[in-house]
Length: 162
Length: 313
Image (cartoon, rainbow over all chains, first blue to last red; front, top):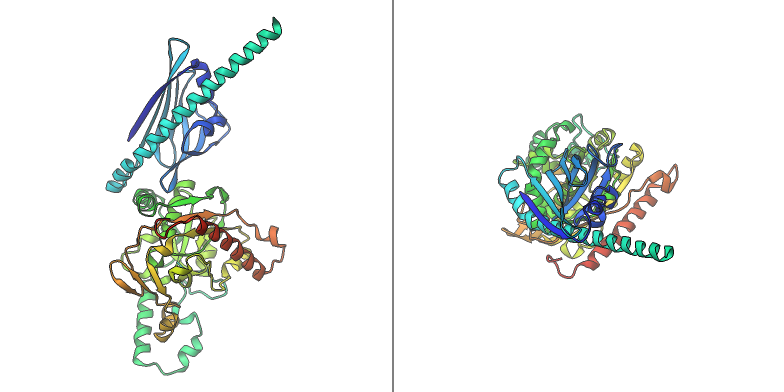
């Protein structure tokens, strides 16, 4: 099952990237995620591993994931090592007007479980889809709020300098 | 599911011999009647059907393949909600002690096991103690692949010393068949063998409190007198012969299975208790027992207060 959604936010791509690439901030915007912990010596970047959990129905599913694509500031992708078979991708693109289009993709598969796996994938899809949409909204709010703070800081600095 | 009682001896394969559990002297003292002989024969059949306890039978790949099915039951049918799994230590042996509900269909065990396996991954060894009778029922051999082993001190010790998480229900068959109107009561029936086990193995205890299971049928009585009358306690280690109203039987005697009503199951996992750190180097078992019961009862009361309607939750 592959679920994707996108949003255009009023902020530069670099600001969006700084939020997405920081593992300490994931819980603040990623809806449904209950755990996102660094697993290993590398906290961020290509090859970084995280233990993540995502609440779907009666269980928190997930497991160990590894970042397999880290092209600053445009592509961030991970794949699962243990637990639910999944891939996730953030795709960031600049849009005229200093804005950024953010696409979030989540693909998961319940392997080897036959009909129950097929059914579980489809029953979980609306929940996952809702979380993806909510994640983008929350991420957008964070990025736009950061933009406002940066502008306010610049104004204050300008007023002091003038 | 059943209790872990470390005070009793065990046979070579880690399973209790039903006929020796209580008082073998009393059993042998009177001349065997026809009914006695029939029961003994049945006890022998159950004992012969019990597989050798082998922790290696737990199969993570099998569990992984079956998880979606149980996730469906857990999420859609029981609308399961498991809280506080982060209170369980991330690794190392741990004794998970639960109150037990829902009759022999054990919906709370299923909901918790699914949540545990997805949270920690199927790679983490996780065993559950079950009543001998459960493991001897034809068609339930797959439970062993899930890590279910017969309730015996030997099996419990082996599981913990291998570094696994072990789930026990001290109340066992006594608690799981309590009347539905006692759903909000933690009742271990004074069984404290699990505390001896935790102290002996020096492992933390994590209380697991569940509600909703007793609403999956209308449990009327444990049928303790009936069980004694039929000598089930001596032959099959069954203290009860429960009577309930359930589907599809309407009147269900013995509860060899039923279709559970889709009651909402909520489970709260409490912080781990290091017994010696909390109760001293030579702790009093009775004090620990009382503390645990109080703690779990308070949590169960809080979970009960959240529920507005039976079954709906």
